[in-house]
Every structure is written in C-alpha cells, then in structure tokens.
Image (tube, rainbow, N blue to C red; front, side):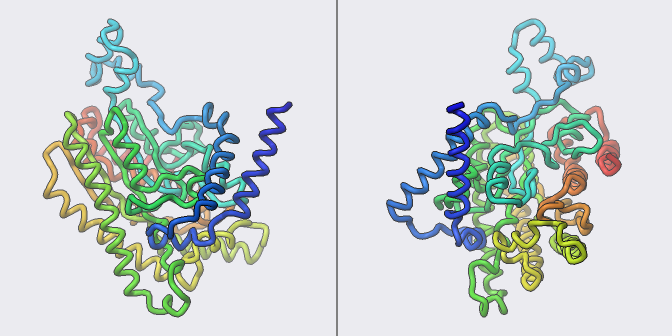
Length: 418
C-alpha cells in the first residue's frame, strides 16, 4: 500500500513538473540546435530534482519494460539449417565450445538512430506523452515484433525472413541533430532523449559493433520559424542557408565518428543515411485531417496542440518547412558522396531517398490523436520504403546468399498487404 501511495504522489509530482516546467523555448532550441545560456544554480537543482523524481517513479518500469533490442525469435532454427552460413557456429554451440551469447553475437546486428518518426510516438496529454516516451519500445516501422496481421510489418520482421539478426533501436522522442556539446533541455532530460550525438555515443559503446546502421534523424531541426521574429519569417531564405550549413556540419561530425569506429572492425559495416520525410505529401495528409476535424471536432483531439511544440507546422510556415527539408536532403546527398571517397574498403556509406520519396499523403497514414506522427498503417508504409533501400547493403554485407535482390524486392512488396 505504501509503495502505491508513493508511486501515486510521484506521478502527481512529475505531472506538475511537466505542466509547469516545460521550457517555453524548447521549439526554438530544436530549430537552432544551439546551447541555451547557462542555467542558474537554483535552476540546475530544480531540474535535477525533477529528473530524479521521474527516475524513481519509473524505476520498476525501467527494470521490467521490454528492451529496445530484439533477436530473431527463430534464430536457433535458422542457424541450425545446414545451408546457413552460421551452421558451423551452431555446431560449436551444440558442442558447448561457444555460449549462446557468443552465438548471438555472431549474427548480423542492425542499429537504428532516429527521432520520434522512428518510434511508436504521438502527442496527447503531457503526462501521457511523457509516460510513453519513457516506457514504450518497439511497435514501430523499424522494430515491431508483433506477428499479428494488424500490426506493423517492420524492417526487423522483413529482415528475419532473410537472416537471423539482432536489432537495436536508439531513436528518441524529440531527438535533434546537435553539435554534441550542448546540455540537454529539462524536457529532454525528463524523457531521457538522446540527440544524434548521444545515440552515436551509445552505438560506439556497444561491445558488438553493428553490421548495418540506419540513420533517419533531423526532423526536429526543421522548426525554422521558432527561433526568429514574425517579420523575419517573411523572408527566411538567409536563415535556411545557415540552418542547412549547421545541420550538415553537425550531421557529418557524427557520421565520421561512426565511420572511424567501423574502420577498426574486422567485419564489414554498411551505413544508410535516409533523407528526411516527404513533407509535401505529409502536409496533404494533414490538410485532410484538418478538414475532417472541421466536420467533427472530436477527431484528432491534439491536432492544434502540435503547434505549441512545433510552430512551423502552422499552415503559413509549411512551405518554408518543405523547402528547408529539400535543401537538407540535398546536402545529405552531397555529404555522403564526399565521404564515400574517404573511407576504407570494409565500410559502405549510402544515401537513400526511399523515405523522402514515399507517399504519405493520406489521412489514414498519420495518427488519429495528433495528425502528426505515423499511424500503424503509416509505420507499415515507412517500413516497406525503408526496407526497399536495403538490398545493396545486404549484398555488401554478404547476408543475401539465399535470397536474390529480386526476392528482396518481393519481400518488401508483401508488407503493403499486411
């Protein structure tokens, strides 16, 4: 009984902290990716107390919640196949020459670095959004493991039809492409969001470095209207140039870190940089939801709340957001082309426009709560697109032996009907 009372009190405390203490300049920091001015000591103490309260509250959930790492459930059957390239390792395992953990370590490892568009996330009430950000894992286009036909047919599920694998998701709600030296805002500390640099830190700390690393991050850097005045928003071109330049520098810094570690590994590593989402199509879907809500105000209850978190979502700023995303995608393409000429033979770096070209222009593909994040159908569409870009990487890694490139394409097409 005492534990339940303490838990309830802590829930109230954290809810109060979230409602009253959410930084007003959170959106502006997302736009500029620059560190805010140094907080006062009293602010540091208050923030630390709020974060500590949240950590205590969520300790049981942290200990027992589903991990962000998934292993193919049938990997033993797959490696036991005499035709499997892991069969020799399986025999060593059966003869107790290697442990089960060592056997798993020899499987292909895939890592996902991203933001909330790569997670099962959506905006609702602040306490509820906070709770999901801290405790929800999987159920998204990369790492859904639910085999039921009404769930997301994820990249993980599609890959395990080709090879047993280990997949780890590092994506975080609100994650930014950051300079790497800025203190996380209070809100991000509460939900334990790691920006691009923090996610790369985690990958670099892993004992088993991934064979395949997928990067889809930067959407939170597109809130261009948050950091400038109303008059400056009328002619934002010069800000787009600076935002794009800063984005490229920060993004490239982290990619170089991933490449540097990959060059020291004794296995091949493929890194796929996905272009940012197709915002022109997204805003078509958003307009459809706005029309539906005008007819029935009960629909999409948090549609307008999105503007508090992301001012550039407003209709008058959407063209600028579309233009900025296109400029950034072109810069990412150039970056990959330049870096490809500098790394060693065991590293493959690729740019893919699979996620920037996919058509998400239908209301059913965005979430029924906030009309912002992907719905289950939206996640499945993204999974199909992301998977369609992987055959060259799988070929480079040598894990496509039993499945031809055309078969890989067919596997990707199957996701549409699931």
